[in-house]
Length: 443
Length: 127
Image: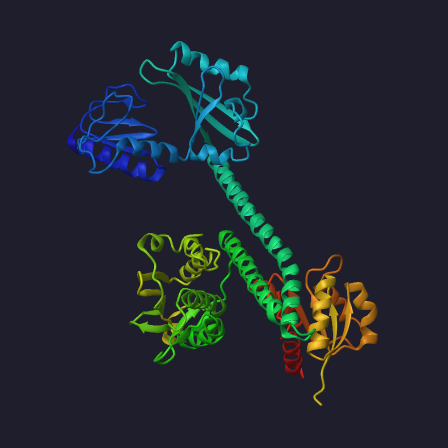
């Protein structure tokens, strides 16, 4: 074959590989080892599933059963781990099972997903994987592998309107133990159907979870409504005078019923977020106005903590695309946290800083500050619970919900803090400009 | 003296009915007719001649939404302002309730001390 022909064959293989999804390996010389590769001539090696182009790479292929490995390793890469991860992530289902009992000892991610309905902790046999593949038939299929008559046994099955191709191989680690490896490939249409079915199942499961938690929250809110209402009526004095120790105890009960309501709301929010059910009603809105309203809404609580909320020099209106209710939730969480973790007599300041395309809202307190370790996990679920444990109420869910809301607005949230000097919680949002409406920004 | 609305309140939970009764009558000074179910509301509504309908959403048997649909068929109640109370205040659900003819949605747990005030304000907004 001339160099031109070789290049043409190579180019054809590259195009075919791109068109048909063949795997492409590159190597400097013909391959003589034991593999699926079929040798046609000294210059090009071809197989329907694999094309090897000569003289175009820095590596080589040999008959090492561990397969191809580049001579020039990537710095910092643990190839063994990478191969394991790739094996686990294969789109085909891979099973490894005991040679006598057929009990499955390993499934890759696709296989696990396929068999997610199987009860955890129960032994699963390979014969259970494919309907109609009974143990006797399986024994017959693996016999040539055990005797060494064949390296690979292939089985084709039709089950549940699926065409399944099974490749079976005997795997042995040196002179050590053996096991069978089965790779299942399903026909393309069925594969997509399985994928869609699995995704639909996952979506249904998420919906069921969301419905369950929403129902539980509803059932919790009904008695909470009565308890909260009763306490408010009692505390108002409308039903008779309440004073001294009774008033003090009633006040404790009221504070804690508010905590329970807040926790119920947070659990519901979290369920909605996890099920992808939190829908934002996004409209152009003025953040300056929102900050002012948030300060007004939270001023009463801050006063109870002996803390003043300030927002001097907020400047002219700044528009963002946002869900006003959810951004109010973000502001209320940050303001109430700031008040809660401040000492009586201190101030909490809110500042807005606009760049050409981003607006930063900062809530700055002069409180106790947060150490680096706590800061690192502050926005994770229950990440702020260690702060709560310091004697101040909190579920540890609020900041993780706030982070999700900010991220759903294409924003970012963060915190700067110094122990003993206070903290600055901030979030950045993209600024919305009126002229963007004319170039098709969807609201 | 400023005129106050007469309220028809439909709520299956007896404790919440009692709290709402205290909040609306004792605190707010409103005139109130209470029903424990949709069918009871249908039997009492015309005689009660309410200015405002206050309906719980989730009730066994006939829901608040179904109750409103039936009440609307009764002469004199075709356009009476309806306010829903719900513990599941998702935005989509609030929008849905508004689309069904509710002028407002009050979320549970409500504030007993301001419930009457809120309801009066909603009612005045419909005049």
